[in-house]
Image 1 (cartoon, rainbow, N blue to C red):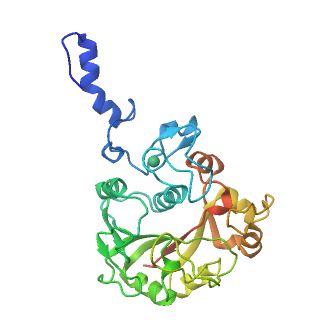
Image 2 (cartoon, helix red, strand yellow; image 1 turned 60 degrees about the vertical axis):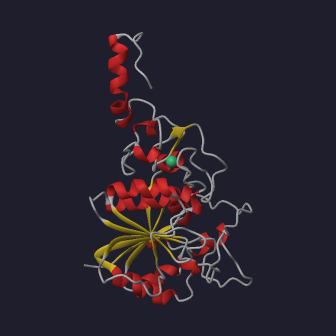
Image 3 (cartoon, helix red, strand yellow; image 1 turned 135 degrees about the vertical axis):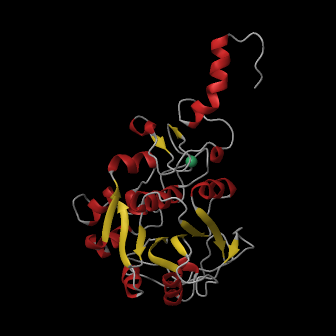
Length: 298
Ligand SMILES: [Zn+2]
């Protein structure tokens, strides 16, 4: 970007101001998205007009890449899939932003750009158990966490607990390392109403097998471990669970929606994303989105 002599004074001023304009959202972004300074907890102003918006990198456009599915609807800029966006949305809309929160995320699906963005706002650490499949900053076994008591404010744990053999041990360790008032935002694939053990070996793109396909009864296990727990869902899903709107039929996407609705307890869930937010952030279809919020009492 050179400022040639042919530029008018106005153009030169515009060129000088462009990086600032980009930062405040008045000019289109350029360069690495995580260096743009967008805050993931600010709703983009484009949200009222755009069809699709990414709450992680603030991309907006006509549509995400791929169909609406928790594992798809990919953001063309940061590569987030819908469940990545829902996890961060749940954390930040419920907890709010507090500078320098100690955030630990187990096996984040997103790479260096996302982690760099998180480090800008939090004391952020990414961990992993199987370092051959992912790249964490530290290696952590949830059943024996090499971390001091009360050393974490927020634990983000997407699609990991189902790979841990001893759920009770893991929940007890998580409870120990969370500070009083600390929170876990927990995602597991929720495809069935009640917890099942896979009948055939199941792997999810790495070397650790799936020990459980959790159902809604995970809420009880979390409460027994001491947490104050609710399941965060979209308003659309809350309406389906409380029979305000009709249950959609299973469409071969791997989710047994009839079973989910039959076993779901509306009083155990809390809506976090209204219809408009859910649509623009790509949290569709509704029954794909559930994140357990687990608070360690003060
Ligand atoms: Zn994005």
